[in-house]
Image (cartoon, rainbow, N blue to C red; front, side, top):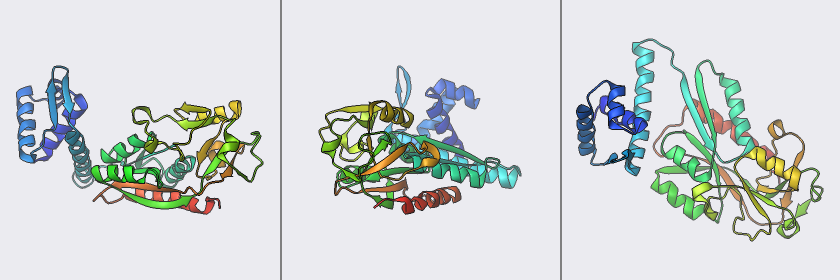
Length: 303
């Protein structure tokens, strides 16, 4: 297996066409097909499936290309620094469920390191996509939660995808409301008290299973339920419809403003927020600093 073969596989994956990839690589299509076939034979894995509509990556192919990108990028960094004597921007990408504090930690990271020498990416996404991003090396780190309900399913998925989960903090469950909500002044509330108000939930798309819900207590029979795709929409629905969502209780006024509050839910449920990474990978300096920034929010966890 050579770097050239890895580059070929990456280009085919991006082009989704053997002919198009060959043009981009300035080689003949038969030569490219032969090189890919030799690579597949060597590793004993079918990377691409040829169809009438073009090239489709297999599940094993997606994983392999993820590793290939990591190898090629690291080689390019070494080549640029020690051979071409160039300064290449180090990349850092993180995927997360919709946590304001995780976004704020990312902002602090960017402020500390600056953007002259680094290239950053942040993806607020659905639960399954957060896991897939880490699996496929789109992101170095993913931020999500586990609890007693979803732990078995997510742990099985982590194992299948060669991913490990690291705990950061445990949180009780809170109802996140705007301060004009009729229940906003309560010290503690029950789900029954919230029944007359719409529960707001992040839509999980094609993986809309209870186990992938970003909100705990996903199996509760809510009388009113609205699904949305982004945090800004949820905040608008909180104000416009007296809606609420269930959360960790960590308030981040730096980004959401001071018009919202968290009221403790009467429940013994605990959610464990943590980060995931690919097994066997070493977390970069940027990744380590990001985890440090998120860990600071332990002090904001409400009792």
